Image 1: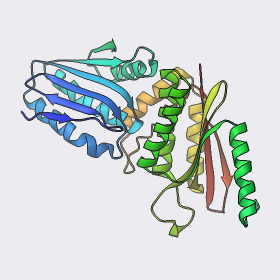
Image 2 (image 1 turned 90 degrees about the horizontal axis):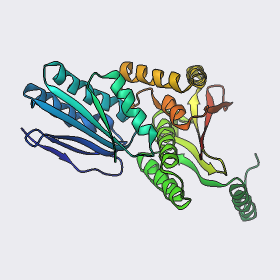
Image 3 (image 1 turned 135 degrees about the vertical axis):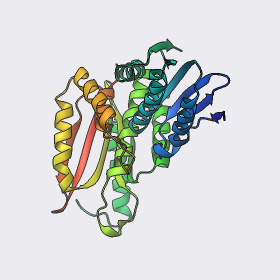
Image 4 (image 1 turned 30 degrees about the horizontal axis):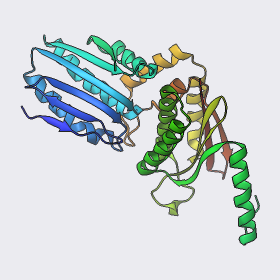
Length: 124
Length: 190
């Protein structure tokens, strides 16, 4: 399967989606001018991955900041992975946050309340 | 307000502006079109200032967060003063800081028909505590769709959540059809 490897910028996150290596990561800052356009290929990739997913998928978020428009799309990303889990695969989320940033921990907890994927919180 | 005419008036104005900014510890003032570029520049500038002031990461992130949402509100929702104003969405942006807090102040023109909705939304948000805001946020993120303008109806909720303070706001009548909508968000420094 094709590998997505997007380098991060000041307002867009770095994204790695690699089925073979088992890397599913979104990191950095997400406040793109056009949220839908930025995330479209990512959502598409996950749809394709869902056709034949790995038995175990660990989705890593290591976000410094995301705006509210991005937060909606990140939920869409999580919902897609939730579906993969509902189809009988192991899926978990590794939610990274900086020790002094409670807001980022809280954001993870709010997602964990909405989706049924188990969340691990990791301080970096 | 008196219109400035001639260099002498401008010199006086610049001097007064300098004093007012110094006295009120205003770090940033802007009036004009708000774009992604402007948002990037202003947030970077403010971040730099905060690093210089050795502000905690938490406060830095909160100010950054509030600024982005406020600026994106202008770039998505400000209405033009007149039809020939063109496509760009304008507003004013002020960032100030004192001993206890940072203030992010933004203002833009809106059609009066939006006033009622904005007022209701802000009143509701201001009536909620931390848990209430979190619940509203989760409800909205689940139900809300990304609008054509790219918003998700989460901006004010997020501003209130991150700042931990009530959002102060006001509407000033400009014309029979238009109002000037100002919001002030306060982020405590500790």
